[in-house]
Image 1 (tube, rainbow, N blue to C red):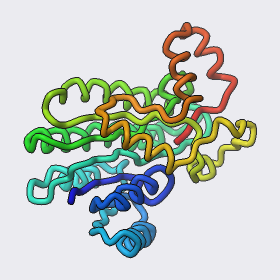
Image 2 (cartoon, helix red, strand yellow):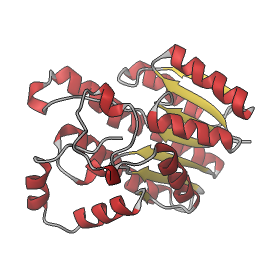
Image 3 (cartoon, rainbow, N blue to C red):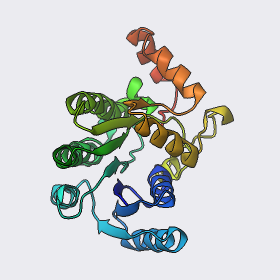
Image 4 (tube, one colour):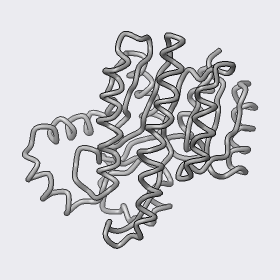
Length: 255
């Protein structure tokens, strides 16, 4: 029996991770801000899969609360074998129209928390000689669509570097880069996604299953679905000037 810790575990991709990991027999540590939703998910996982669950109420835009989650990740007596950094943060509108404190909170959740928790997990797992880290990024990390793209680009490149540092240690790092996914993310951000064609939408459960398959294979970058694999391959080779021009005319991809 192993233990997985999932941030942003009460909705969307994080909830899919929690369910699939529990279905596969993993005990799950659930992290999110909303205690009632955490308790509901915890009860459901225990009843449906018979696994042990633990809840941590934490706002990852708060450094002290992020530190408490890091302490749990690093706990030698209760090892975490799989860390899933999935917690999201949504801002509607452009960078210069936001209060800078909003952007700082956005950065803390999407980037700083990933760094802090990956550092705690990487050291603890390397000491034991096994484990895996999954950082949820986005196809948006390959384009230039405001601070969302910038933050997700950090997560993608950071994870690639971490994977190289962990090579040969028995610990892996994988970055998941989904495109448009059917979750409550866009609704909570109040973003109109009606113009996005159906073929670009992904199912959260399927992409999580594909991601865990990639983790098992030791793959560093996990891009779900043939359509997004093709899009990312193209984005890696087209001139950045063209990427910048096109980015202003489309919605940013979200989790």
